[in-house]
Length: 166
Image 1 (cartoon, rainbow, N blue to C red):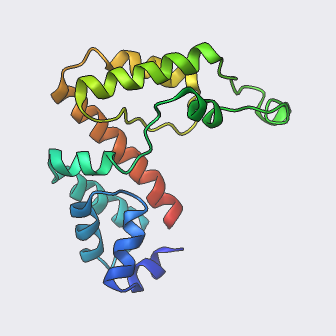
Image 2 (cartoon, rainbow, N blue to C red):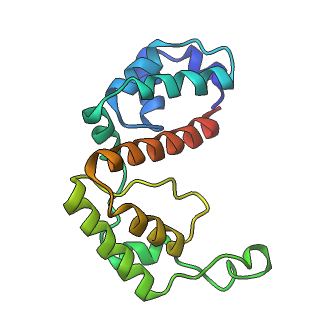
Image 3 (cartoon, one colour):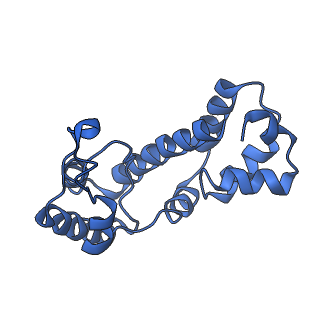
């Protein structure tokens, strides 16, 4: 899309664009109102500042914009690996076992029951095994700690989406 396009969009179009990056309506409003952005680094810095200014309800609203990983079939599809993918181009990619997928689904359920929101992690480049390890590391946390962890992961996800935008 490009930053120039974002800067020239109507307010409604800009809201829609930023909603693709993060579903916190307060963050979206602030991002749309902060235009024009002078460059990508300015965009990223302002996005981080607006995120840091938000509170729990805004974070929870953003988390709700993520699909819940709750069943083995959806996890199997997410981590499916064909023979072609396991070839020379991606020989280091781990194929997720059914046991790992089941443990990840069960862990996601336990996480949501404990904290009241889904497990949020910047999953880019992570295998199912890595995701499970991170989930298990975070499960013992108290809710306040985990809310901060999840908010930081959401910030990373948003940054990646903004980078794709510009």
